Image (cartoon, rainbow, N blue to C red; front, top):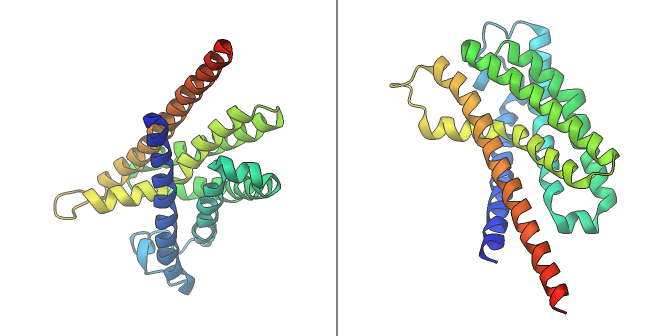
Length: 226
């Protein structure tokens, strides 16, 4: 019972964290509505801001990623799924189309020009590949009627979606301009955000399976005793 409560606390904390940081990201993203090429992140990308294709993908990504974050939040509540199946499907399609049609292609191009040198570029491209793979696997799983596998892959897909949040948390907590090389820290942080999120997702899925197994086992024992 305590483990089940602990899992619920972790899930609720994660949901609220993503919600809060999504709102903060909206505030950050709002600065780019001026289309000024010398603000925020763009100040560090002066070598590519003159490229209209890179700029187009940049704006497409930043103005659509928050929708992915918020859409994904609704997909892991069992109560929401039971009471709003049709809405779940609609939001799920928005999430999937947003990732596969908009953000995976955009992030692939952005990743090729990533900060952090080869370490950062490799990290971003692997993130992009995993993002596409987990999302496609989730869609194929539900089409085959395997809801559990679908849920697991969606959890992994969302773990990649939220790497942008983890990246910023790690940077704000650990980066010190006086002590760290920006390019090296940036590249390593790309990998750190991905590994942290995948480990958290794996821990949740593993704990969920163990708890589900114990609950089913308990019910079977009760039925046997009856």
